[in-house]
Amino acid sequence: MKDAPVTSAISAEQTVNEVIRTHPATIGVFNRFGIDSCCGGATSIQQAAIRDGADPEALLNALNQAAADAS
Image 1: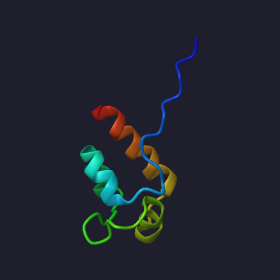
Image 2 (image 1 turned 30 degrees about the vertical axis):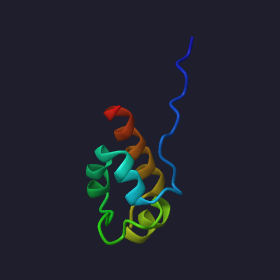
Image 3 (image 1 turned 180 degrees about the horizontal axis):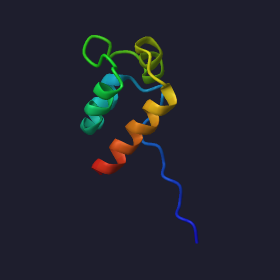
Image 4 (image 1 turned 30 degrees about the horizontal axis):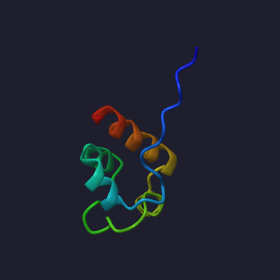
């Protein structure tokens, strides 16, 4: 029997600030990917990744992993 797929807690449309507020363990992920979570935190994860030169898919995967590990 296969394990059920993990439901993504975080989507690319959520803002950086929203994710940090609901999942504080993601702060390190944003830092590791070079995402400006201070002044640029009002933008979506997708827009922030593109703006700051990060791979949006890799960022989202790492954020969801950090949120899952912290729960």
